[in-house]
Structures are given as structure tokens and as C-alpha cells.
Amino acid sequence: MTHMDYSDEPPRSEQLLVQATKPYNAEPPVDALVEFPITPDSLLYCRNHSPVCVYPEETYFVTVKHGEKDVLRISLADLKAFPKAQVTAVLQCAGNRRKEMGAIKPVNGVAWASGVVGNCIWAGTRLCDLLKRVGGQTYTQVCFASYSTFCQDDTFYGASIPVDKATSVDGDVLLAYEMNGEPLSPDHGGPLRLVVPRYLGARWVKWLDTIILAMEESPNYYQQRDYKVLPPTVETKAQASELWSKYPSMTALPLNSVIGSVLAIPTESPDKFSLQIKGYALPGPLVDGNVASVEVSIDDGTTWMSADITYQQGKWSWTLWEANLDCVPVSGTVYSRARDEAGNVQERIGAWNLRGVAYNAWASAEWGEV
Image (tube, rainbow, N blue to C red; front, side, top):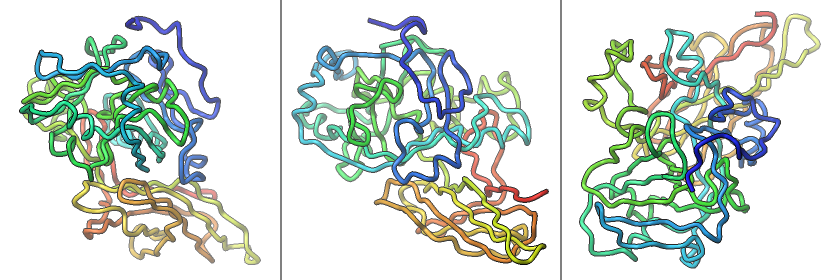
């Protein structure tokens, strides 16, 4: 059955800040988010282009196609009979921090703050194991689709990833049916979603029901005409209309850091505070490794102080960090920047683009009477 309206939406966490209701889009307060190395279901953002589907596991099937030809139809129960794999990976929306980019110049999209991200333990069947079962096909792309519901901009939701990523054991691409040890909730793609570590969340197709082995990327709107970084000179939808096909679909997002909370603690000196700063950092493309360090500055980047890494798990997770600064003024602005294992450093300025995606300028937060 295809869901055609919003009459069967599941209950939602009251901790989330709602950006829109139809479709439901919400994010957690970032100060709450950074308190948990593993993001609980109640604090994981919800990004939707459609109504949320609720499906019973016992009747759920996935169809694998080669081009137009069906080559396998497999139940969720049979998928669970494959060896179970588990991976800790951060899920992030391409529009994270869009509100900040929109303050530079208007952009198109939900005005997300910095909470559209979460680090979870995903479990399910490795995609490469299922593709071995199919065998004997020639293809360069693996396309994924959910026909379970109508979408804002297309008749279904679709995405694709290159075959090298899809078939790599080290890539840890999962057909996930669990999150943090529990069955996937409907809001997060249950009963089955794609997990593609280090790729933006737009490729992590929820309510996955179709896999297509193809020679081209998915033709779906969300692969071909959305989630692309256009040049800053493109300022209107009309200007963009002829350019979407000329720019690549996004895969990984850039190196990033965010300040989640700043606590100013009075000292014995009336004109000085101590600061406790917490935040998260996100790696860029896999070839650059994970986050290696995070630094903070309270003098506009003239000098930088190292933060302590308080959490990082493997190559796919986010990084939580904390910095404690003594004898700071009673007010000011603190900045953060991340550095990865390849030596890349987060840039001060994030490039503006019409869709407001991939924003990664230095993070900043104020304290005191600024």
C-alpha cells in the first residue's frame, strides 16, 4: 500500500524542535545532542520529503532488479537470516547549519540549525552479502528506492551509490533493521533502511523496498536535481534549472565542527570567567580519515587551544570534544575548527550555495553580555 496522506503519522519525541509538520521535519537542541556519544532515538533528527510509513515486518519484502528485470524478491525475515553486521556511524543531513548559511544570503530549504546529525549503532545485513546472492550481473551503480509513499518532488524517493562502495566489505553499507539495539522506528526508516557510512543522509534511503543494479545513477529527483553544490553565482531556481546535470551528486560532506554548549562559570575575579565548551566534529571524505583534533579560539582565530577528544569510535563515527578555558573575559565569542588525519583544517568561511548544503565554516558561540 502506498501512503498518500499524513493520517497515520507515528508519535514523536517532545524533545525535538519541529521545523515543519507536513512532511515532519525536526531536530534536537544541539546542547542536548552533544551529551550522548550514541544518539538516542528521542534525539535523532527526522528529515522527510513525504509522509512517514508504518509497516509490519512480517509482510515486508525487498525486490532486487537488474535494469527492468526482477532477479530476487526477499522478505525481511530472509534478510535477517544473513550474518548480522553492526557499525557505529554518524548520519548527517546535507542541510545541517543551513540557517547560518541563510544568514549570509537566502537559500532554498529547511532552515536547519546544527542538530541535523546523530551517531548511532546500526545493525543489519551487509549489502555486499546480498549482492553476492544475486551474482552474475554487470552494473556500475546500485540504485535504491522507496515506492511506499508519495514525495514532494517525485513519484518515489530514490538514490544511488557507486558499485565500489556498494560491494566493499570495508565500506560497511548495510540494509539496516536495527538502531541502537532496537528495531528501527518508522521515523528513522523502519523496518528497513540503507546505511551508507560517510555519505550524506540523502543516500540513506528509508523504507527501502527496491534495489536496482544499473549502469547509471538513479534518475530520481533527489539524486539528480537536489543535494548538489552549485556555484555561488547561481542565485535563483531559474538560473539553476539548466545546471543541475552539469554538477555531481553529493557523496561525502566536508570536515566540520559545531559548538554545542558554552557554560560560563564565575571565578573569584569579578572580571573573569572559566568556560566549559562542548561540541561535535564530523569527518570529510574517507580518504582524509577521521577527525584528528579540534581547536578553539577566543581571539578571532589569532591563537588556538586544543580541545580534548571525549568520544570517537572507529572510522565512521562522529567526534565529541570538550574544552575548558580559565581566566577568560566576562563576554566574548568562541570559535571551533576541526583537523582531520590527512592534515586538512576546517576553513573559516563556508561557501554559499543556493541549496544551503555542506556548510562548514568555523563554528562560533557567544557567552556573557555580548
